[in-house]
Length: 248
Image (tube, rainbow, N blue to C red):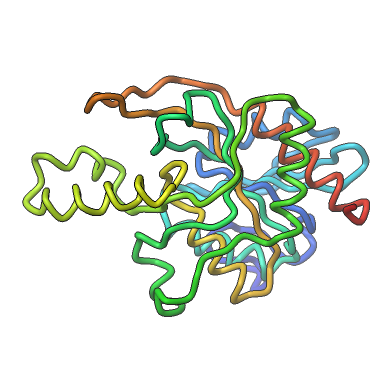
């Protein structure tokens, strides 16, 4: 086995572009690749699927992270070893605010570290903050798209079904925490951004995240709607194009 090949993502130096979109779902990678010119699959192992192509002349890779912080951290670490410098998560989320609706886009400026992976990198007192340049480019691209969007703090967790806390042994603790996130103004909840921001900070990567809202809770009822990622993908790619031109 080639010693330069990363153990999990199966890429070696030179096989990743500088700019990488990192969705969670490996099934979403071909969707992102459909926006690229001359896209080809480079590697696929476990939950890690990678394509590479060009967007408006800019070399772009797409690599899936799998669900949650542990598998995502592995992906980010290994991407850093093979040449990635700018990582943008394109994912899905559930609304935490009454004025954040199904189908809206959320650009994460920072993330609540309510998960376990990032705590194994650095104490929780250290904030999980997205790169300012990447976030600004995502904001401008979202504005240009004309689609409803918000920019702000998101919540990051480990337990997907933890939001349905009423039948859990520690239901009161969960209820207090969800109330705190909502009252504090967190826009949505998802599972990978805080890990992305912390690994990026420590490994000196530029990171950002944009999520499509596919779930919301109204009067205690959770609704999940299948909404395509196309708008978020387009916004992320336009942000990459701007960053590649040197920003504004």
